[in-house]
Structure formats: C-alpha cells, structure tokens
Length: 263
Image (tube, rainbow, N blue to C red; front, side):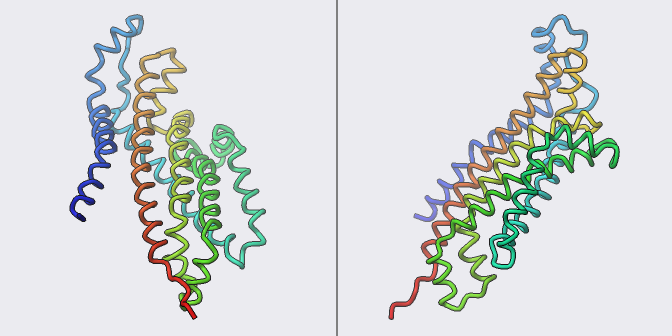
C-alpha cells in the first residue's frame, strides 16, 4: 500500500517535471526557431534576439527571483512569527502598515529611487523585488499562524512541550498550507515583475522584452514573454505540488497532535 502511495505521489510530479524539461529545451534551442519568427514577422531584419543566450537570461532571471524572494521570505517569517507572539503582538499593526507601504510603491518607482543610491544592474532590482514580494508572504505567515486552533496549542502546553517544540510540531505544520500560498503568490508575481529589471541594466528574460518594446521588434518581445510566461507556469505547477505536500503535513500534524489527557 505504501508503495502504491509513493508511486502515486511521484506520478503527480509528471506535469511539473514535463514543464521544467520543456522550459530547459526552449531556453537552449529557441534560436532554432528563427525561421519561424522570420515567417511570422517578415518585415523585421532581425527576428531572433542574440545579444545573450536565452539559457543565460533564464538563469539570471531565476537567480534574481530566488535571491529577492528568499530575502522577503526570511523577513516575512521573522516579522510574522514575532508579531504573533505575546512580545510583539502590540506591534502587529505597525509592521503590517510598513510592509504594505512597500507594496503600494510600484517597482518602477523603487528602481528609480534606488538607482541613484545603488547604481545600475541587479542590485536596485533586488531591492525592489524584495520589497514588492514581502506583503503576500507576511500576510500568509500571520494568517497561517493565527489559524492554529487554540485547543491544539493548549494540549501541547499541557503535555509540557516548550514554545519551540510547540511551534515546530504543531503551529508550523498546521499553518504550512496558508504560508505556502502566500509564498506562491509572491514568487509568481516576482517572476513577471523581474522583467522590468532590464530597464536598469540587469540582464534577464526582460532584456528581449524591453529591447523589443524600445526597438518596435515584436519578435524579441514575444521570445522574452514566452520564456517568462513558461517559467511562471512551471514554478506555479511546482508550488501546486508543494501545496499538496503541505496539506499532507498538516493532516499528519493534526492526527499526531497531542490531545488533552482524560481525567
């Protein structure tokens, strides 16, 4: 039975793995479709973006998204955990207001403010994406931890579990699906938003899009948009599988949660 269950679990990863493989093949061999783009856009002298390789642009895009989203996640976890504890509960409104300000500023505005201070390249884009991706993650962390049933926490305390043990064995597993939903939203948004980093000199999948827009080259724009969209769909499919895993983790934690001893 466990073997069947494990096999079924692996089968659910077929779609994400197929999307990953397709993304890699597209990034490595998109230039072979040059005749297709020439046929679609015969008026263009150059129908294939060749300033950088698409594989290199994809890796740079992923690196920027991972670094900015990773930073946002660390801050969101630290702030979310703190404001849901007794010591930081009174600061919750202030923290949420400050983080919301980062979401109200468009990434382009953050880039415009950051470039004079940091310079051109990935650094200002990193700052803008980290600020822009923070709010969905923080909301997910707070909502997930707040949704933990008080009965489960009381039972854990009644059995002598420390605050740290209660967090890792009860709170975090039960909050995982909601926390992961916030991360999923933030990362997916950042994949598309990261394309604007090309406006300040960062090389990523936004480069052919920005150059295509400025040079009226629809083929360049389509090539960058195709890879960016495929990347977003692939990452979302991976998060879908992680969401299923988090539900199983939550269910396991709910089943194994300590119950109050009967008198």
